[in-house]
Amino acid sequence: MGAAPSVRTGRRPVAHRRLAVGVALLAVGAVASVFLGVADVTPASLLADDGHARDLLLLSRLPRTAAILLAGSAAAVAGVVLQLLVRNRFVEPSTVGTTESAQLGLLAVTVLAPAMPLPGKLAVAAATAVLGTLLFLAVLRAVPVRSGVTVPLVGLMLGGVIGAVTAFFAFQLDLLQTLGAWTTGDFSGVIAGRFELLWLVGALAVAVYLVADRFTVVGLGRDVATSLGLGYRGMLALGLGVVAVTSAVVVVVVGGLPFLGLVVPNVVSLLLGDNLRRTLPWVAVGGAGLVLVADVVARLVVFPFEVPIGAVMAVVGGALFLWILLRRGTCAG
Image 1 (cartoon, rainbow, N blue to C red):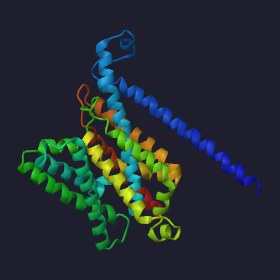
Image 2: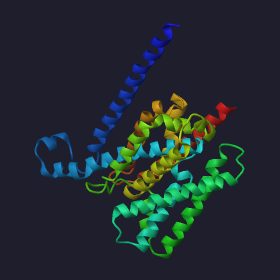
Image 3: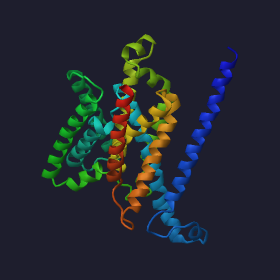
């Protein structure tokens, strides 16, 4: 009886040390990313007071790396929140129509109110993202779900319909190139003054951590949450808001990052379990790390040219998604 507390308290420092190692590796990767590129920016050029190198570092390299870390961590956090709300491990904003709905809202406001300030456009995109997610939930209630895989299939079909409608109107209005910038993730255009909105989604990720225990209870179902005295509707609204705003901001600033919010939470869940308070820091670090690695690959695969990171994420994320389906199917069997 007396040995149990010491075992539990002994595990926590080990977990903290492992998380610290993960953060340290992420920091090393971020520093390496800052000095990666066609232009010659090195510690030596910075120490030599090279004005061009310093300006490139401050105006492009640092903002790009910050955008990678913020977008990756926030998108992964939004994915795990949506999975808890839907109670299905195979969903994320790009597989339930949330991202496509945000793109449709952006297209509508671009056509109908092109002079609207950026915060207004984000509000419209977030509102349509919420509506798209609610539509997915309504369709899900009307469709008999016989397995967990049915849920993402319904979401993918709904997202495909919304995406097709968006593409049709974009084609009619000669805005396909603009739509492409929203659908395919790309950090090459990130500079100082064009990424700061991502700090908002970073703050939302911190807010999720502060109420992580409540989201864990929400993931147990409405009846359990209500029996424990938790305001289920309020947490549902908060979660949908986090997912919608995160999706809208990421789409506006860097474009779509497919499968990110699906694969990272699932890998973390397989390794650490489903307690959000414990796993959320790992989800954030894993999301940022995966996007960082994908960005490095996107810059090196056809160097000195660059492929959109969304293409790399689609390939890597699709492969990981297939592995997760097979792994969880094996575990269930």
